[in-house]
Length: 123
Image 1 (cartoon, helix red, strand yellow):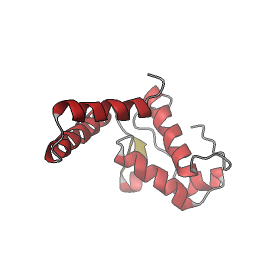
Image 2 (cartoon, one colour):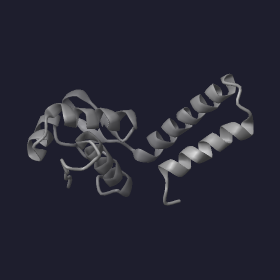
Image 3 (cartoon, helix red, strand yellow):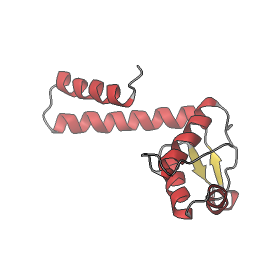
Image 4 (cartoon, rainbow, N blue to C red):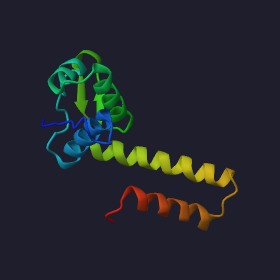
């Protein structure tokens, strides 16, 4: 696993770690089931505080990119299933909230299109 952190970057170090691991997992460079280094070991390797790496791992777990299994450590999760399931849950929550807020279907959809345009500027 190749990671680098630019302390001068505007992006916080934990987010740099999270993004790199997520991208490597999506691309297959980090295969499903691969055990990641411990928080302490990766923090030491990158010259960061353990809390920084712990936050990255916590967010990766929340996104379904990794799974933590106690003594077995943190492993790369089966990305497709978890990512689609989590996206469907988020979409459902959004739709329900937009409805409660009284947004019309076109307005709710327009908000999603705008948000996706911001998240995926290259599309």
